[in-house]
Length: 208
Image (tube, rainbow, N blue to C red; front, side, top):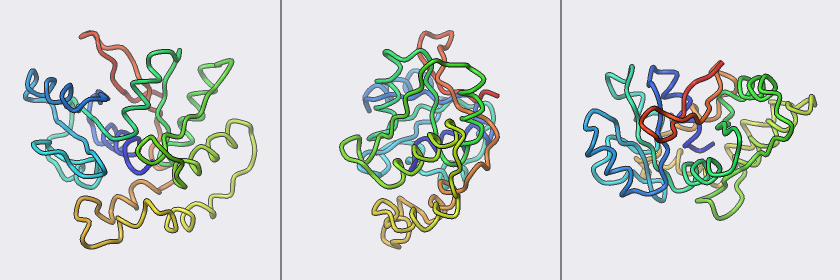
């Protein structure tokens, strides 16, 4: 939720055509070299990678001009690792974030899936984190038809260890605007689904 899946939703809302999630930095660079008009977005240890068009920051991405119709190549320390791993075995893969939680739940219900697995990638895909656990709890409650009090969200996120960087002036790679963009609930009215592309790879697209 901080920040890969939120960034993808905001990118597609801003007119980006599709987002290609890749696990390896070298693979991301190779795609950019083959397609110079594609945008290269990503991070390791939360910081922008050298030569990339922007880091894993929705604030930074939305400041770029000419997003409409573009293809993004996206690699991160946790989020894209989980996506590429899930694509190997899951029938359907959706990304989930607070920003499009309601739309994601609607999409899951519309698909009529017999089993739904919610995967919270956590901090650098190694340990649990407050923000991803909170998002998973919200999605799970809504899928079960249970009440989830949204008043809990903002204070819990502000207290999360991963949120500290957004309020640290020295962390210019994690602007405070990212906290606002990632913690807003249900502000994007479409789900994001991983789908096969004509070129043979998988990409995230808006659905519903």
